[in-house]
Image (cartoon, rainbow, N blue to C red; front, side, top):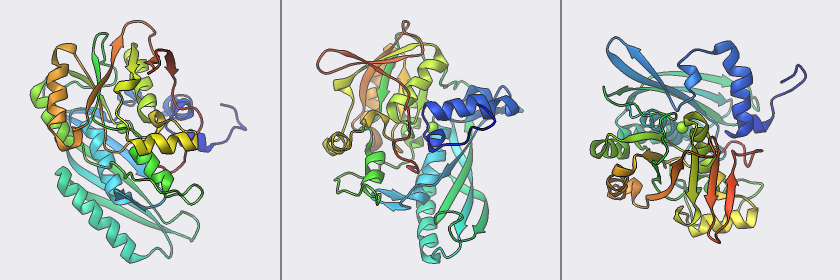
Length: 337
Ligand code: MG
């Protein structure tokens, strides 16, 4: 990227431009072996303990939406990034950037939501920071959370561990969060009988890990959606991924909204779903375990990992064709989370 290039909304999409920004601008000056893994959280070895460490910022607009708000999103999002490494999330920090004039009652509502989410996930917020900026220097409120969790001795779950032959599982319907936010945004605003799936996934992950030690990779498909997350895994693990379109769970209302708006639900954000890549011998066991959990009742095996087409994701369509699923290109909707 040249001297005159500027940051575009696309650089925050979580898709191809975000990845280029990370690789070309952020990584070169900050590079170290932990950061370069580019997983959902870094795994730190301190003494004989391994810790997962992650951070994320939340700028969602609107701040209150069906199924959640910026507060629960900020807790669940970081909890989930820790859980995707197989860690037990323990402690969070929370930083707030607030616009002058923001209602204290709205701040209290957000904090109550964070309290409930933290209790559900079994984590504590143990450090915080508040900055207030001039009116219009930020839109209402932005929140950053960081978190740490502990990782068991034999747990090695990462984006680079998927192997040919593995099964690809998804814990439920995709695109719900993205369509919910879209439906409440001034410029698009429409009625959709769908709500955000914002939820902490560490309980589901704990159950899955109790029935199998053959879960190779997990990822929560947030910005950029299922398709982008699978592309990341295909690149990190240097494998191909083949999806079966008719196995991907979708709410009718999400399909309908996406059709009308010309969007693809496979690129829409999720805030309470996980991808699990599991050795074929354990796939049924893990799937049944997911289905028995309230956050995985619509879980499905959606494809497999293959040794050809490394770094690419393909989808067998319902009408029998094959479609290349690339990373998200362009920004579908800024401030989705
Ligand atoms: Mg993530």
